[in-house]
Length: 185
Image 1 (tube, helix red, strand yellow):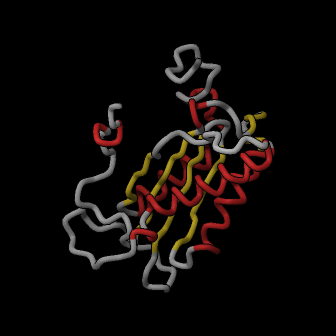
Image 2: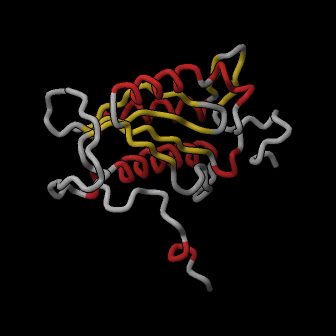
């Protein structure tokens, strides 16, 4: 049997410390890009039960990880966008990420963006599978997308994108109503 993990191309920056203090924009998609989280009604997201679970679990992130703050986020019909802020100084001051080559001290792998997203995805999946009595069923696609927020302009642009995402759903590449949607089944 072929080992797919060995042949996967990483979408992470090589030599970047994803546990360092900074702001990160993450996007997580449902398995097979199916609309499972609710629907857009008149430019606003109407969460269903699954969407409410996603929202509640995201908001628990700060309680579970005292070094993490959640910025703006939005649950969309088949994906989720959110800003995570890792801040090790405890002062609540937003620090933008350093360049990948900047030296950083070792931090626990459980404090990386990957670990935070994995924990979130796992908690959501577990709750939904319990609710639906579907143990082991996939809910999220493998992996996630992330963008390292490097400055205030980038931070503001991403916040506006998140805030306006439901209003722009009709144009979104993940909207199944779009005839040329590459994710449409």
